Length: 437
Image (cartoon, rainbow, N blue to C red; front, side):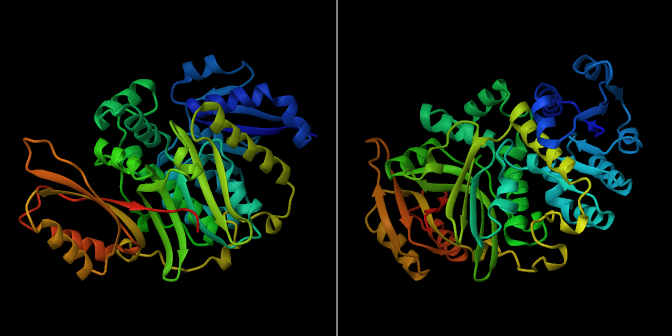
């Protein structure tokens, strides 16, 4: 059979990895597909760099729209990122009747519904395994492997940069700023790390997983997002002493009120496998009502791990080129006209337990005032530790772990406690998840 012709837009880290892995494993891939998959044309702004990376028989252009309009190209692989040009390219490729593979989680989280609708109408596939967790095949697991299940919740370490920073802070006792600079030097963090350390990247990914897990449209604008910039070494150390580890988690959960969709630092019991995922690695726990908890672990970024997912999508699309569009796996797992309108639960209505660190003046009655306010808000304490203060200081750290309560209750209690004259600083609040139910 004639080869599948691919147009690659962007030959940066992932694009270069895709070209390399596809060429290196070409024979193995052809045995799986039944014919060769060949990158015929590449678009990149740096033409000279692109030409150095590819064979002489691969055409290189600076015009990405030339690629998506090329009559001989069957599949477009978009790896330039961003939400403007990339969106135009993908929609034009779909209009031209071409299948699309993308690793663009930000674009899909914000505009996925529009893109999938266009693809559905045109009868083409948009594949995006590489958009979430790099080399971990979590999209296929959610969409196909767990299709028999009613998904109950997903919790994942889905940003390697933030996980590396938290791991280094815990292991070496270094400050956030010091570890961030080290991560940038190693290439684990961008020059502008905002998307990673503020939780935005993780929110893009959990938004996509929530849509597939629960059969809802992508709703990135409804996600609650909180990063790791305010975490201190004290909190990481205290959590460890109490048998917990702090991780930045993306969490989506089916509850009575709707769907929770949130990203924030989270205390996890050390005995949980996911609590022991360190460095730049990713891990995702999915709870299905038939299979129970399942864990997916691996490299969440990098040239060849992410290329592994891109090429897996290429193989899938190549196998399905002649399939009836009505019998392909839907983009978001559920049939497009059967997506649910289940609402996203506002963060103030989310129920979870909390870690609280209070800096309090060492005066009689201070603790009684604090516990009274918590009780008035319906919040009960499951554990409490008072840390010894230095001789020259007149304030102490009090660590409290609460039972499950509603977020708005804890917000009200914190506001009242912080107004007490015995308080010596702002309260640190970190949510807790058992991840066992």
